[in-house]
Amino acid sequence: MEFEKDKAMENASAEVHIPDYEKEIAGIIKGNFSPKAMQEKLGDYHGKDIAEVMTQVTPAERKRLLRVLDVSVLAEIFEYVPEDSAALFLDEMDMKKAVTLLSELDSDSCAAILREMSKEKRNQLIDLLDDETKRKVELIASFDEDEIGSKLSDNFIELKNTMSVKSAMSALIAQAEDNDNISTLFVSDESGEFFGAMDLKDLITARQGQPLEDLISTSFPYVYGTENIDDCIERLKDYSEDSIPVLDNNSHILGVITAHSLIEVVDDEMGEDYAKLAGLTAEEDLSEPLSASIKKRMPWLLVLLVLGMCVSSVVGLFEEVISQLTIIMAFQSLILDMAGNVGTQSLAVTIRVLTDENITFKEKLSLVAKEMKIGFSGGVILGVISILFVGLYLMVFKAKTAAFAFAVSACIGAALLLSMVISSAVGTLIPLFFKKIKIDPAVASGPLITTINDLVAVVTYYGLSWILLINIMNLTG
Image (cartoon, rainbow, N blue to C red):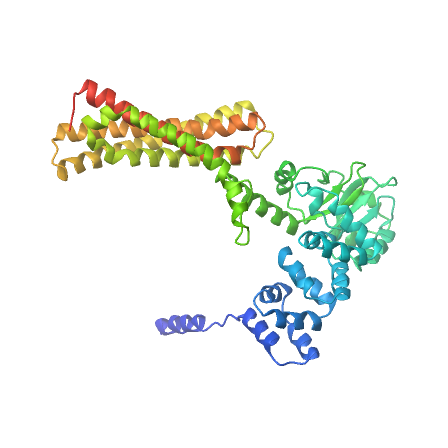
């Protein structure tokens, strides 16, 4: 009986239907519905799902959709459309409706979309915007793309610290008509300088006669619009606030950086750092011209070509070792790969630690020591495994004597241990050095460390083979 019950529950869970919203939305857009019917049907779906489908339908179907939907609905949808796609969609719209739509969007979204358009089209649209929207867009455009002010939004509520609870509620209601970001309320003093912030819940539950200043957190985090994104991103991530105020140099509130924008910024920064670790100055996409991609990659590739030649030259110095003991060539890649892997791991950890601008010299030394200990511990474990397996391999498959096989495997194990320790140090010290001389450690370290660790591995491996196997043990073969 219990078995049948479990089986029935299993069958029921297997029959759970997960709706395919995108397929349903595409069917409505492609269907032969009247404008009113299409509006009503699409009104049941989230803006993000509609945004996903807009990039999949034909231009003709999308133009019909853009004509049919109200501007307020399109504004919600466009908040989820990538800026480059949104710029193309605006080109497919009636100019008057496109201008109205831009005015409905948050100022940061509006500015980001305009930035993706051709200069001629962008100037046409900006000229047609109302004065208030134009002022907000020009404010955001006044910041460089690497400044946090370029990401600010004007969707926030601002109160005065001299207000009563009742007047603050009235001001909130008046501003909420145009600003729906109301979970956190920002407060300025009589001179307009940022004073602090309060939770909406605290204002709603406050007693009528209670002073407003009792509800305000004066230690609320903030940033200045001209701050570099890289410099303040870690500080912003430490707070779990829905929005953080962005101030001008006079400490007046310009706007806010929302949690949504913060996530996008963090994602962009991670993508840039990933590209830098590969020696690129920026991320590539599928539409980027071939010449631009080559221009990004070639400088580092030329540097690495020179360093690679140095590695090859070093290998050439050990021709005598290789000619007398050719078997060791078979295990060169083992040493090079493990040294490279350890160095890359140390580099990743160091780059992550260096995002903290307050790290002390003592903590940096501690990081170097820790990474070298990790390299040593891993080298001991992998070295012992290599000694056993390489020794057995040479005895069984290459018919070498036990003395010869384990002498070679012991040399490989020792080279593996030494190269992993050195590579751990290199992977930590090089980014620390570049950080010290004000060069981005991510873009300068990645490819360089890989090549240097190859050099370390080659010198370590063939050097130990020459000293231990040929000069001390007089082995050949």
